[in-house]
Structure formats: C-alpha cells, structure tokens
Image 1: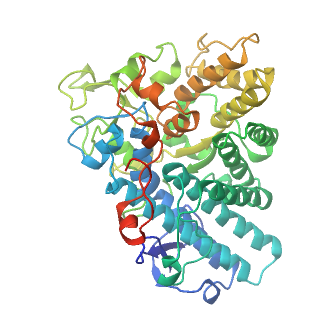
Image 2 (image 1 turned 90 degrees about the vertical axis):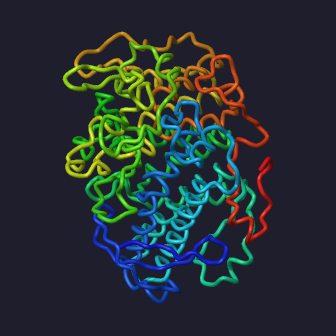
Length: 505
C-alpha cells in the first residue's frame, strides 16, 4: 500500500491513500480518497500501508531516482555536467547560477512534502488504532524516521522550511504555515530519530535495508549531530551503532566492487539504509533508475545520456593504485572489438564516466535499461565508520580508536578482488588531530565518491570557496558563500505564501 498527496493551494501537500501489497518491495498503486486518518485506519496493516506510501516517494523520480539525487551530485565538486545539451535547470545547479524558478528544486521540495504528509498521516493512524502498544509504537517509529529523513534533506537544502507535524486537512491549515527556524526543525528531527531508535527493531523481516531500523535511525542521528557540530554526541551515537553492529547485521563487504553489483544486492551486509529498486513497482514514476541512465555513456548504449559525469580532473587526480578508482570509473569501452578510451572525442562527454550505477546492473535490466538491481546506499557501514572517526577526532583528538576506524576502510580498499595490495597504507599512530581530520575528509571523498554525500560534506565543513575557487579545485566555479550553501525556496511557494526568500536569490 502507499500514500500519495494531492497538491493544495500552497503547493505543500494534502493526502490521499493508495492500497497495496504486503511489503516495501512489492507495491502497486490503487488510489482511494481519504480526509481524516482516524476514519480509515482500523488495523496495523492499514498504518503499514501508509508507511509504504511514504517510502514510495524515495523510490520515485523526484527524489532518489532522479531529481534530488542528481541535484546534490552535480552541486558537488566531484560531478560535472557531461552533455551540455541537457536542461538549463541542471546546468544552473551545477554552475551556481540557480534561480528560484528552477524545476529541479520545486520537484524535490514537493516530493519530500508528499512523503512527510504520508508519514504524518501514518503517525496519526498508529495512535488511533486498537492494537498492542508495542506494535503501535513500532509503526509510529517507522513513520517518524521517514519524516525525520525528509526534513533532514529539506533543512540542509533550504534552511528554514515549513514544519508540518500532522496531516493537513484543509487549505486553511496551509494558509497559516510559515518557515520554521532551522534549529527548531533539527530539534524535531532529533526527537523523531531518538523515538525511532528506541522503538524500531534491530532488523526488519527478511533483513531488508530499505526500511528503517533502530540502527538506521541511530546512524542518521550521527549524521545530524555532525551537521550541527555536536561532535561529542556524534561520537557517542556512532559508538553505540558500532557496538551493536553484530545485532544490526552490519559489516564491511570484503570486495568494494560488490557494493555496486546488482547481482549481489540482496546479500550485502554493509548497507544500513538504502533505496531498493527490486520493489515491485511497474509504473512511472517509480523504480526507474535514472542514475544508471544519466551516468551511462552516450553514443555507446541506448537510453544513455552522459549527463552526470565527473570532470577529467577528478579522474586524473585519483591515485591509480587505489582499487576504488577502478570500481568508481569506466575509462574505456569496446567498440567493434577495439578497446576505446572514453577520452576519445567521438564521445559526447569525452572523459571517464561513473561506473557505480551501470557496470553491473543485475538481471532486472534485461529488456529495460531504466531498471537495475543496484541499490542506492543512503547510509552504509563504511560511511558510519568514517563519521565515527571524524566525530572522535573532532571531540577527543587523534585517538587510536578513530585512526582504527579509518584503517578498517583502507584495509578493505587494499583488496582488489583477488589479492591485497599495499595502497592505501594504514594511517600511522603518530598522526596529529588536524592532519587526521583532513585525512578523514579526503577518505570520505574517495570512499563515498558519487554516492550523494559530497555536497553535504562540503556544506557542513564550510569549504565552498576552497573546493571551487582554490588552486586545486577539481571543478572551478565562482561561488558566493553568503548565498550558495543553500538552495532557494521554490518560486511557486514564494508567490503564494510570500515567504522570505533565502539571501542572494
């Protein structure tokens, strides 16, 4: 079952309900109307159906399938626009020339609010049904995780946004909406994630990673605390998750390439929270894996656009001894039996392409090149280890514990699928705090390359000018720190609500 929303006057959201099947990985759309949650929710299954609807927005085109994912990828210094004939909206995002009428921004904004509205309705429904209190709290916790995750993206994108914590049942309720200060939104996010951590199971049935667990809620809390520079709390929370890694089922995969192999997606233990494309959706806008399309090589395979492509400097600056470079890039293809470098000018974007999303798409791609089995890792265990190392280094210095977490990630990077190499070497125990923090930042750039992490890292580290205008910039652009750390509020919202626009727009 899933929920979708009907847009109202303020372009925020209103609710409608959709019937569905039994799990997040097998959903079909059948709309029916609904105004008040208490009039519909009679059983835990009804509430779970609403929760599936909230998740469904993540697997749709406006969020992780395409628009939001592409937006935060090209905003970073790791991803450029390859085919310059793509939409002006995408080029604006990439070149920091964006304006409030940009469709990418408004589409993602609307979709996150649809997910939030569905989650709010599920929360109200969970409270209203007649069921065991533990079951009710578990359902509420899963919906609150979704609400927290959606607001975490919105507040990092736009700063202050309207905070809605209950189903919207009238246009009048929307008329009173205003931009909620970012610190207040973060307080709500923290409360939701704590509730989710305390009331969700360690693992979901079948071990699926596209539904929230106690571990994914705690992991997102680490990310929130790092964003807020609450390093002590981030260190404490990351230690909690690492200490329960066995119960949660988390561990580093032996081979880095396996993380991006659709044939192995259901067997991976490293993902903490992901977007699973084996979800049973059959209709647009669901399940279309557009990052595979947009990173795939135009002029080489049908429905391939070469839009989301790194600059040549990203490839050239990456040490060739690092196995992760080989996994992350496709630098040549076979044409008419001849190995041809992607730097050949016969290609629309003559440079190496991102390989993570299309190299091993899995069996679902057969007959449909917008379908893959390659999950998107929103959080994975290596990410957590690096967040833990950063939090500890920032709050306690260059402790052996923090160094050890980075070295775990580096050790995995030394295995090339057949043998263990000597690069990258372990960090020595003599490293100082400042140097260790810089090492961790660079390790995140490489380990999590092209996984929708880099822009938010740039943002929270406050290094915009350095990475785009510095001498070693991988993708030079003129930037304005007073404006460019945030995206504009969509013009559609400004026109109707008269919200104050973000500075510089």
